[in-house]
Length: 124
Ligand SMILES: [Zn+2]
Ligand SMILES: [Zn+2]
Image 1 (cartoon, rainbow, N blue to C red):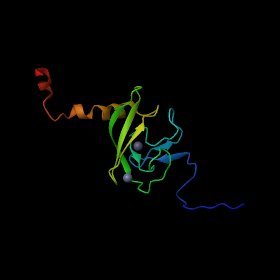
Image 2: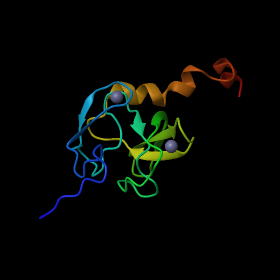
Image 3: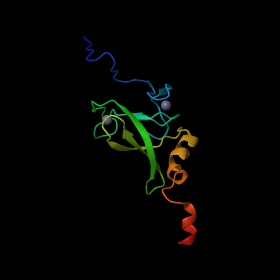
């Protein structure tokens, strides 16, 4: 029996990870999703997956900023992340234990900073 350690920092079945943004230790088990890919506290992620969620094939590994919320047809919220390293965009399902305040903060961000006076809407 031999065990090969290709890279000591890569664990095959990590049970938790440390958020690169807020330093929270996050358990990998997440309600409602098979692949936890973002911090439930601050919602930042890391660029680990390449094409398929959970493939961990990306070489980038930079932090990914939660940019906005998209809503799928079934009403499920998807967090849109943008990588701070390579600018790639990706959509990740919100997990059941994501901080609701953090989610709402991202969802209303455009309304909090409108590019035109909101009073103009009344005139339409
Ligand atoms: Zn965090
Ligand atoms: Zn990246």
